[in-house]
Image 1 (spheres, chains in turn purple, brown):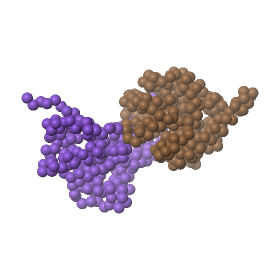
Image 2: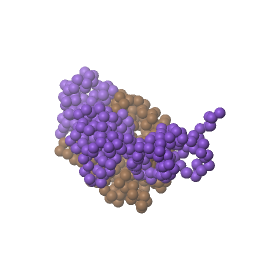
Image 3: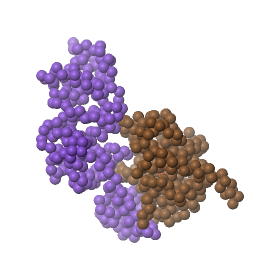
Image 4: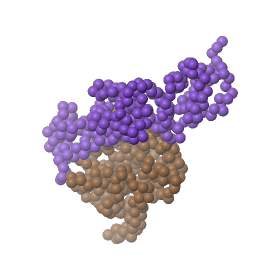
Length: 278
Length: 286
Ligand SMILES: [Fe+2]
């Protein structure tokens, strides 16, 4: 056989690096044989032996590092999930995730983005709706940490808006703001975990939380239903007047909410669309 | 900025800008010549790391060192990555932008490892084209580091220094000579590290790396988790003589001790840099 071209060699080595078992299993696989015959790979025709290592052992240096490196990335983003699942189940989940969703980005910070959705499809996991939401919460924390920097709105800049203009404005939200509604108390669970209280799987109880970054720290703010609904509409870019309709009989709290959320840097500006009333 | 301007730019002794040292740096603004950043740690992120970097870059020269350019892959250059990289370079006014002579993935997958390339004419051509493209985007020379490798390909057609020489001829790129990586590779592949250094195209070398590694029964691994060993210091002495002196960085990326310990390890290089004048005159007399 002629020497492998660069593309075949790299596709072959990519399979070897990613194989869940080891290099030998990889070079024997059907996929790898498409690029390089097993015999050549095993007998030093592709990778040379060293004085102390056979070709497969040399390839295993790369194979062995791959899985642990990527699992460590997931590990650092999901401490609460690891607690909920236990180390053993977490490792298997993470291993499957690495196999099904190899990194497609130059930056590892995006690697675990699909983990909540991946958990949602895992029928073998007990309480997977809870686990999915817990993972989603932890992922939002990571996203908020990395979100672009932004400047909070100066409330003075809104002083001259008329009530009619207030109704029409669309507020710009902080790029770090994320909202999560769950049938489980995921935020309470995570806080208990952070407080070393070793929380158990919680019973169902709807919870709502806003996640955002202020002063380089990520904050989690529990919200009740009306506050959550108003903030969701604002985040979706709806007019202030439309958003506050969700408050229903809690409309009297809107002034306080706006003040608190502004102070927390949740709003960065606003757009006043032209008046379309005839 | 062309390569010969950059070559004159010996920044002295630097260390990597690492999260665990942020507090110390902000409180003390230590007396250190320069910092190297891991480019990807400051890309696609807008929080505290960028706030720190902006302040550090106001006070110290910065050099950027990346791991995801994938310059040796058959995949095309990731242009979105390159644009982000350039934005970061402009923001922190980095003196050099470096990556590795390696590939990190193919068909769009990133394996997040510095994988070895075969030293063949084909790989040279692929890499040279991409290096030229990078340099057009950056409007500056790219600097490439010799990696630590744990295998060699049977169909390689030339040595690593010869590959560097030909790549430089094709592209005019710069090199970052990691002395520890030379030592690790020499041990893993059974070549003479000093002989390797004598074959390096020194006119192209802009920077040195020093680091610690781990020794296993069968091979050495580039772990960056400890001080520099005596053999690597001796290689650095030779590299310094052969190059005439270049910006030098102490890499410490795992089990990172406090700032002063890492900086202290970098400052040991002074001894080897100062001893150059006497040794180089003796070399000339050889
Ligand atoms: Fe290095």
